[in-house]
Length: 480
Image 1: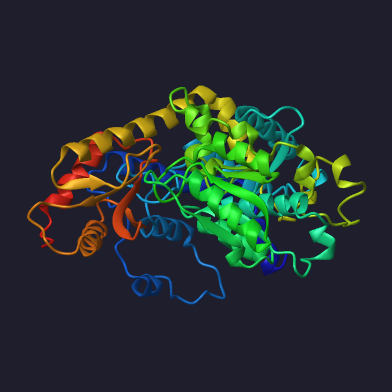
Image 2: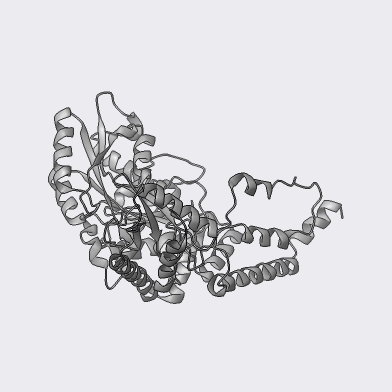
């Protein structure tokens, strides 16, 4: 046996794999214990990018060495700790431990869900999940969809279908025709991926026309009517309206019912970017925030936000399932035997990816394991907590919020009575102090030109006491 064959045999040895897996789970178990019960455990490493790079600058060795456990431990130490209840930053959740184990299984099996013959089990699970999610939206049996790699690609995929449906000619085969100015109307609060998608589609980013939001940061209907009329006057062909459910910056939900009525009256495609907010459909308390979503032509729903899944798992759902085949209309005889509509089980007909992980498995198994009620209760708890935090801020004399939160996203700022300087600069100092302490993680956002601190209360273990501790921490800093 050659040296290579000896090493290869050891690498794939089941006993060695079991030992590595056991040690890795032990590290992760200890990490979870520290996150949930270690009062002094850091939420993030306060290290500059350049200094962080120095920690990973050792040359790759020609000969292997026994450093797997050391590398795992180092990776955990130098990463952000989303399972910590004081992680209050971006819209990325603390995954369920069981979902992470599913991710391990899916990664190990490595079945690509582009075509059925490469991923038979996961193909069936994905189909049932899409069926369930579409039902939650209120779609009937004519609907369809699939999973893709993130909300950005999801929005692009949906808008490609909208372009094909509403352009008036076959853009996929003929390209953008000269003199055909296709446009999409979006809230000024829309996620940047919408403008990026419109630019990728060859329409130019200026074809994503921003519509003003009202004082609650919802798309303003009067402004929508005005903007649409102006587009028509200029000779532009509006093909779609994009609704936020909810907006990334403030967590505000657009009035989908009124937008759906507007789109019906003007023969426009209604796309709902519900990457963050669609999980509210599982809520007993707050599902009315999505009233009218059943009228949308397409919806994007991220399970890696409010369904406690590891990233990425994004559903793209179409009211008319036939539209799910129109985003990408190509032939590939080495993958497909029949027309796309005859092969629901070959998702590569409909997705950007030709290789796709077993993303559906982790959601399917955890839904079966814990039940849908658990996830609905989780959504309820995070929104209720965020609104309770807003009440605490409202009762204080030194903090204020940008808008009363509808979801689990809240924008607020420190405004002590004794301070007379720039509030924007003060928020930046607050965030620097917070991150520098490594005790909390939060981000910032500019709302109507003003700087606010922004928190997404997504960790299932965050309590009102943690949020009060954040305010108390800020008050004790010598910031002015």
